[in-house]
Amino acid sequence: MNASRKLTLLLLATVLSVSLAAADHHGAAQEAAADEPEVVAYLGDQPISLEEIDKLIAGDLMKLRQQKFDLRNEALNTLVLEKLLDAEAARRKMNLAELMVAEVEDKAPAPSAEQVEMYLRKYGDRDPLLKGKEGAEAERMAKIQVGNQLIEERRDEFVREIMAKADLNIMLEPPRIDVRVPGYEPSLGPDDAAVTIVEFSDYQCPYCKRAQPSLDKLLAEFPDDVRLVYRDFPLDFHNEAEGAARAARCAGDQNKYWEYHRHLLTEDGSLERDDLMRRAEAVGLDMTAFTACHDSDRHRDAVKAGLEDGAAVGVTGTPTFFINGRMFLGALPKDIGDLIREEIERADKQ
Image (tube, rainbow, N blue to C red):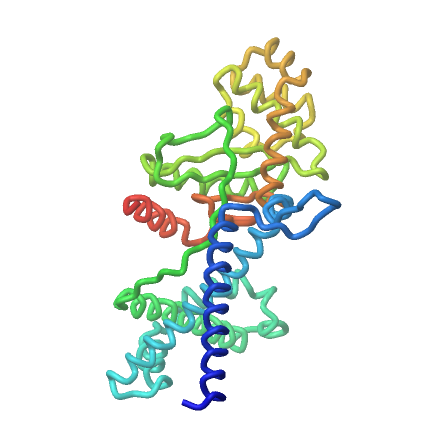
């Protein structure tokens, strides 16, 4: 071996040894850093960690994670369906267009006279395609519209049939966040339920009132598996919401929280002081005790805590629901029953 080649090999060996040592040091540093907060800035000698920053924007980060999941989930469903339809078309020796004609257009029922008449009554003045049309022409256009609806319904049914037969194992997990639930907060359902729904709500919010029947239905359908926790989140521009929230808690002092709560959500009223007193009488409260409670600051801190805890997890409007930590803004999902069953199954596996 000539001197030049020997020197080259020695240099390479030295470089490799230094690189391996550096890698070992970097790996050890990473392991050590895993237990320490990641520092992203220094104010003088004072470190500022990424954890501190994330706590300040936990709610916004949760929304971003939810948006990311929603986009991925939608894309996943689209991709899975495309693959299933292509496979079904290939199995039948058809192209995709032929498959859709055979399974959707050919199997969709024809519009009945009753359906066409009902459509005319319901949408005759609102459907732009019917504007200015009368008699047979209006009926013909209504028949086309009803036919299109029936085709869409059959398409959805076919998609469900295809998906039901698929050997599909989805491992894409939705984002979850820990939602603080103090022990004093009112709840319905067993404490050890597989599914906990935390609702941040406002008694002056019309959308919150609309959600009530869905919640009632869920609790009736899953009495042993669902727990509902109600947390106050009175919005700034709803002037009477905070007083109504305190009034409900005053009713809770007399073991009638849920009776008063339901009255607030199902019966019309101004939610001003006189209206709250009227409601208290309607549910049979001791008026002296209720009035003294409502006119005091007894439950103001509990209501404030709901606002603070909600803001910390990204609540900006009502109603906002967290189902086992999964965030749903504005309304419960249409497939809420299926979602609850999925969460029960997930809990059973843990």
